[in-house]
Length: 358
Image (tube, rainbow, N blue to C red; front, side, top):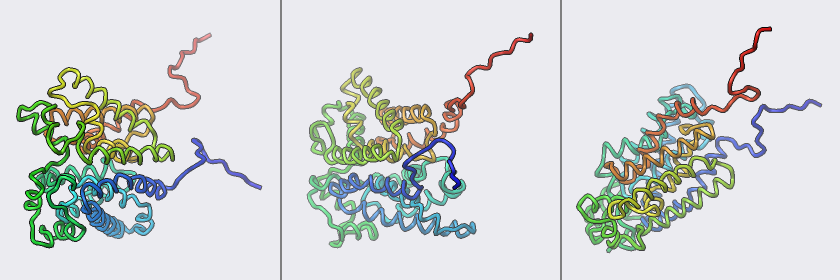
């Protein structure tokens, strides 16, 4: 009887690409559900639009390249890209914004580089940046959590607003915002940044109604939900701990130093960690196996750089959340990080000793 032994490293619980992608999708469900609870049905509709465009785009391009698109689509990578993009978009963004983003992520960022495994940048984040730069008004048209809104919206209203720009009763998105007692913001990060730029202190900025106990209403629970999903991925060994831990640690250390230096100007550590898309970015976006570093030491450096960039951009940049920009900027450094963190080949010493001639 012949037996075969695969080359190292040896893994006892090896997953296919499709299994890994599906597992990551499942792990987003707690955060997805939290977003639906606090911000309505819009996110679900955005995901359906993004998924449809992403799958059709990938199938069309692969067919043009004479490749087996059915096999490629079954790996669920395009579906995961669509999901991550939809989770980052304002729930009531117009349908064409989502469609353009999904097309850009698959056609330009992924397939133009050769398909899965060859893309330099994270497709969802590169597409998000392209949309944010091209359509800043649409990309910042968030509503406050539904518990603060004077008038909520149901699934039918969400469909009408996304596809026509009006609710079933004829209200435009701007009118729905006005009915929400004027509380409109991208995230609590945006609200605090705006107040600080107007001369208010950090403490004064937190006295507004969208905040409770120093954290944004809704975003605290959304981040905790994504944290639970991320811990599930760690337990299942779908991702390694290096990137999320180093990213969150870097954010915490830098934010703590700044806050201790001037608590009236710089937000607290907990505010940074539990606002915006921090936990989604740490466990689901930064850990992309294609665009992230591939060595353990490299992953630590990669995650720390993302965390540092997030605090820098949030503090002194023009984009309050900064997750997408931090990830894409650090993606460009991955080849250099991998080059200088390559593990030593087994059996070779770090320095070669000269052999003396006898």
